[in-house]
Image 1 (tube, rainbow, N blue to C red):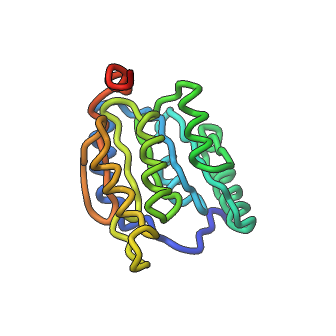
Image 2: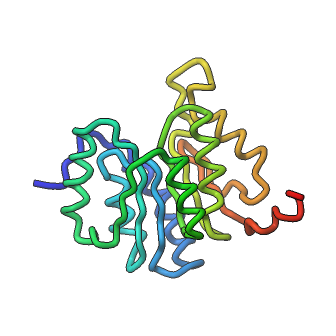
Length: 194
């Protein structure tokens, strides 16, 4: 019955995610609060619930512009034994992450797989970094995805731009996906913003 997935773009990343998980468990314990930006059918969300969350929580954000995918995500997630630890926000990632920031919510782990353009990626990274705890990890999918010759239509340019401007994070791990570790608190920016 459920879960039902029509594709698997996630499983190859699990070995690196397990390295991240070991680090997070050592840093924050086994009950993690996680944020996923871009959920598609829920494969990575299910993995986060199974392996990362423990007694913590998972918040997912997706526009779900395709009703068939939205329905599949909903059925997949409602069948998960940790469904009560899941909050699904439907809307634009920029808007929803900003709302989380306004609520002073913070996450141990953030996964971004929403939007392929450089602009989408740099915007999601800048906003998500603000809701990531110090020493938390943020993974971004598709770092080396290069379907289009114009780099503005691929994630890498936006991710590289973030790397060049962030004052709060550093690269933790790099491959097809890239992971950042937050090394400074948001408050360190205040003296520079006057």
